[in-house]
Image (cartoon, rainbow, N blue to C red; front, top):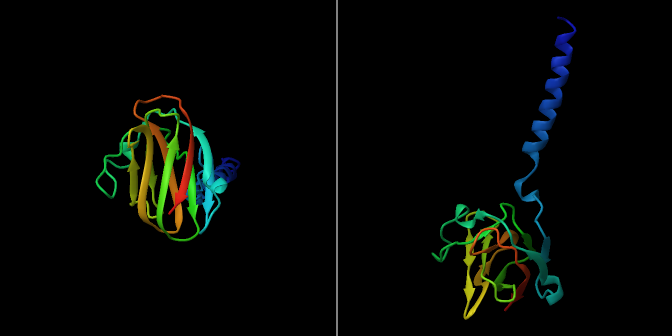
Length: 163
């Protein structure tokens, strides 16, 4: 019995170390499916372009039913963000646009405070999603690119433009 006690303490020490590591890792450290954009004032267009593909079955309305402008948050994507966008400064106006050759895409962007949500769907006559909005505060944004139907694989390019 005395030999069992040290092994239990050793195992408990490993378990405690694993739990501590997992709980100490910030949620935002989670990597994006396709890449990170880091943007400062007067960024070059090439810095604000990333590619990816859709294909998840996670309902974006599970993150939020409506955004800050009361637009519906719709579509299906992967549960983890497709992209991370780090704004090093505040931006008065940004447009985030998807180009998927006019497939039916959607967008959800979660702000650094996790409560500011922006959602986008069709852009004019195009089925590609976009969001054009004011008052982008510096910080880390999580971006999901979805499709209207779950599991649809669509290649896309995401671009960010400043006005």
